[in-house]
Each structure stands twice: as structure tokens, then as C-alpha cells.
Length: 98
Image 1 (tube, one colour):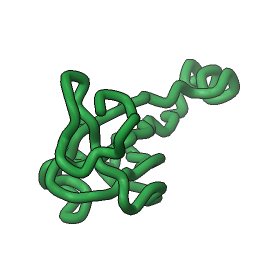
Image 2 (tube, helix red, strand yellow):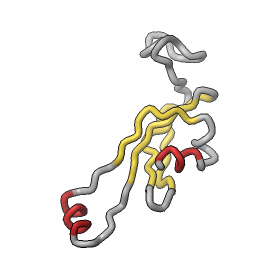
Image 3 (spheres, helix red, strand yellow):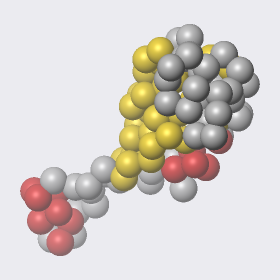
Image 4 (tube, one colour):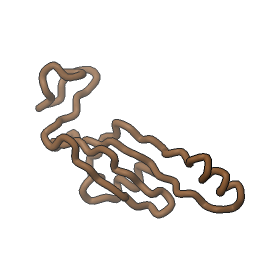
């Protein structure tokens, strides 16, 4: 479901590489309210980069039930992803995999 929300986004979706997908757990209060019948928000935090362009996006938070991205933050506009087995073109020398 999280990947589907990101893929549907025109800016982040095409060619997205997913470093992290974290499903946010409800707080104890939200959980108790859920047991009592209230629906709690299901959110996920995702770190995304793209093999074909520079930039890393952090904290792209998705509201899963609404299939909507709530926030997008470009944290390193010039960053390039690095592969575990070797450098990807443009990868910073000395970085992981590079």
C-alpha cells in the first residue's frame, strides 16, 4: 500500500528507490481509543531516492487510509544513491558502497 501511494505521486513516484519504509505505530492512547471503536490514523515514513536523478527525500509521510502524501522534504538535493556492490554514477567517493 505504501509503495502504491508513492508510485501514484508525479514527483516522487517514477523511478523511486525505497531506503526506508516505516509504519508508524499508534500511541497507547490511540490504541486504547481504537479498542473502544475509534479509528486511528495509519501513517508511514519513507526515505526515497532515485537512480536516474539527484536528491534524497526524507520523511515523505503517507496517510495510508486516504492514500495521500502528507509531507515531502528534500534533505540533500545533490545526493545520489550508492549500490551495495559498487558506486552508482555520481556517488560521492568514500560513501557507503562507493
